[in-house]
Image 1 (cartoon, rainbow, N blue to C red):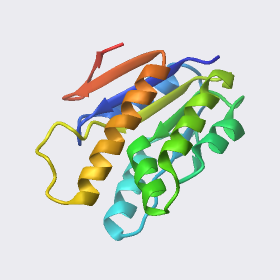
Image 2 (cartoon, rainbow, N blue to C red; image 1 turned 180 degrees about the horizontal axis):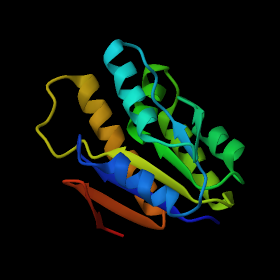
Image 3 (cartoon, rainbow, N blue to C red; image 1 turned 90 degrees about the horizontal axis):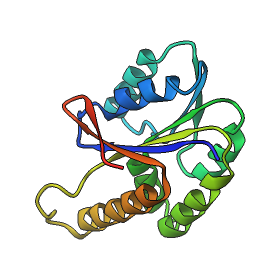
Length: 168
């Protein structure tokens, strides 16, 4: 099994940059599995910023929903960076798919991966309790997903002020 790492942190904590550096440290060529979809100009700009930061050593594989298939399709092509699990979760929830079933399937596929996989996720439970049911449902789902992935991977890092703090 390839090494598996989860990097979590708050908004603008530096987690994606940390993950990109770690991924390239595991091999000269890497695959960026992008879960984001641009539904508006602001998200389009965020995606473009991420793409501009990456060099020629990256290949992008866009997959907003079927992360298990994306991992299987890219295995053998170098270390993979999945950015990010919380966008993947929101995609699953808004599409009406069973996010728990999808999460368990993706986690179950990790031991068969030959190449390393680094996941980026957001730590969303550190603030106040949201005032609406959908936001509370998402916060709770993200917390569970992060716990499940953290239990399954080899390492967990918390991004704080652009610095990685090893948790596991």
